[in-house]
Length: 300
Image 1 (cartoon, helix red, strand yellow):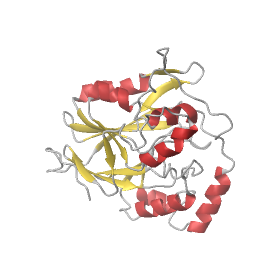
Image 2 (spheres, one colour):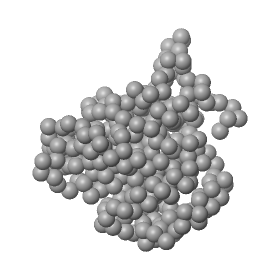
Image 3 (cartoon, helix red, strand yellow):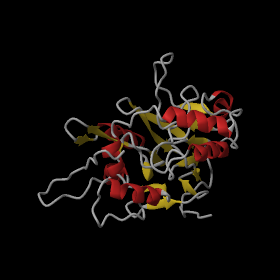
Image 4 (cartoon, one colour):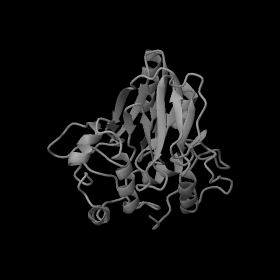
C-alpha cells in the first residue's frame, strides 16, 4: 500500500463536511469536501462549462467553487477525478490555476488514454502514461486531507479506470452507483464491463451500512423532479433498482447489457474525453494558434 505523506494528515480525524454543486446541464454533482472552515479541502469531479453549438468553454460552475473556497478560507490540497468522464468536461486544470492543489486520478487512466489516443488521432507526443496528472492513485492508497482520512478504492466497470474515494465516512461513488431509484452506471464504453461493475459494487457493499454515499450524477425519475445526491450505503443495498443486496451477478449483467444496448452516446462524449484524459487541459494549439477538438466519424 502506498501512503502519501501529508504533514497535516488526519492526526485528529473529524467527519468530513460535504457540499454538492449540481450542474443541471450535465446532471453532474461536483463536491467540495473539507475538515473545517479555514482548513483543508478537496474538490471532486469539477465541471468546465461547454457550449456544443459554439464550441466555447466557460467557468461559471467552477467559479462557484472558487468563491466558496475563498468564503470558507480553505486550502485546496486536491482536485480529484473519479475517472475520465464522458458527459462533461473537467475544470481541474483551471481550478488548479485559481486555487492550487494536486490533480489526482486512478492509475488506470493510462489504459483509457491508450484506448482513446488513436480514436481521436491525438498528437504523437501525447503520452499515455498518465503524466498529465499530478498523482495517480493505486488501489487502497491512503492519505490525509487536513484532519480527514482518505482512501482510494478501484471500482472498474463503467470504465477500466474508475475509482471511488472514501473520505472519513463519506464515499464518493463516481460512476458506479447513482441514487437508489436511478440505479447504476452504463458499462458499454471501450474497456467497460458489467461483470466488473458488479464486482466493484460488491466491494463497496462490504463497507458499513451507515456510510454516506455521494453520486457523481443524478437523473431524476418522473416521480422525483428534484435532483438529490446523498444516500446511505444501506439504502443502496436495500433498494437500488439495478443492484441491491439480492441481485445476482448473472441478473445484473443481463439487465445492464440489455439496457446499455438501448442508450445513445452522451451528448458531450467527443469533447469530454479529449479534454479529460489531459487532466482538464485543452489540446495544444495548431500552427494557426487555434486549439481544436476532433470528431472521428463512424467510430463510436
